[in-house]
Length: 508
Ligand code: AMP
Image (cartoon, rainbow, N blue to C red; front, side, top):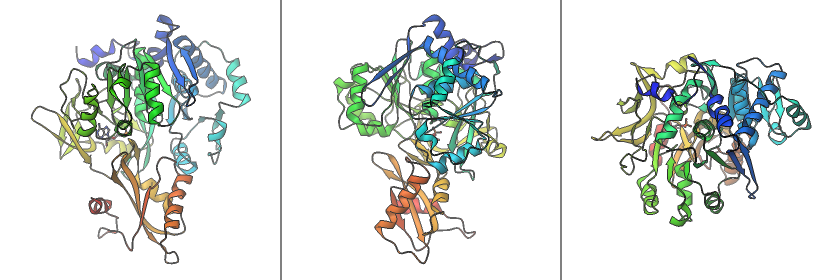
């Protein structure tokens, strides 16, 4: 029996069919109905607890609502909400209904949002009154506004009974609309129901999650870490998932860990760096395991937390891999600065300097929505290629060295330079633009725009601010240029293509 066949035994499979929500919610609702599944805490400290039984009822109600709205299976349901109870109930309810859930980060403004909704052929958008204002057009979409009287009435009248619709292993459970730099900046990475096998087993091995854990994943469910390890994997394990609804604040985060006696944390190096000035050994006395993802965990950060008694387990994966691929886990001897070793069942190689994997593995994306060629471009010479550069040492430890393409990672969040450039090009002062990520001590990278102005405009600090805010207002609150530099011209190839690499090198 291979490793994945063994792992299959940990989840609910009906021969070749499954619905992940049965494993994540319904089985625990039967075995431990009163156990808290989700505990929400607002910035002000107000708490709300939802047991596994309540979660089951609420996801059933949502699935029934989709049915009543006459939505067919495989509808694409976008979820555009801040961290709140309805992200979880609508995400799981959609999947239960046999449809495809697509969570989006709440910071997208009109243009960033619209691009995603139209590229994903949204059938439904679940949102709130405030965020709904950012939707420009309705097309044929149904909009579910969770704080409207209409929704409250509808959901109240829905039945609490629903049998999860069983799907073939390879059918899509959810999509992650992420940024690539390969010509098409935004695309929906499709992850199957069967990916749960790997998501569950990595949560056991790497996060070391057990049923009695008090677990906190700090990522918003609009990012793949927040979806897979903030909703699916911990619920499948059956532990209690804590959700802090506010934004980052060192003091409040530390208070949250202490007050709730959190035992396992999954976060990004940016947050770990930002906590450094405030956190001490006693604050982490209940914490057994901290894992990190999204950007390189430097040895300075690793050594800092080691002195506080915790060896951070850095993990490596991407939306396209559907689950962790290379990682440190509690029993593995750590090498500071290394992202660890390939996980059991994963065959990883460095091919032309790039991290590559031997397909298939359970979490591997099954497609990219409406981008067949982009999907195919990941597979070369029987290997899946990642565009991430790394080295391996003699003991088989991987060390991340950078990206092969132009993708930017800021605070662990993935941003395409092409998308930001196309927004900036719409400003009347801009003639040409190139966007890159530049190193930042806290956020890993920040976004910088190099701009050639139209003849009738002159450089000024006021114009820099205006251009930066133009992106923030129209595209996204989390991904706008913090720095703007005016240029006479941009470096280009003979065929006229902008060489972002040259700008990055000049910046070092
Ligand atoms: P995302 O799909 O948003 O999760 O972004 C995936 C990308 O984040 C990877 O392709 C890497 O470029 C980067 N990344 C993820 N984990 C790590 C890590 N442990 N160290 C360095 N970079 C990472």
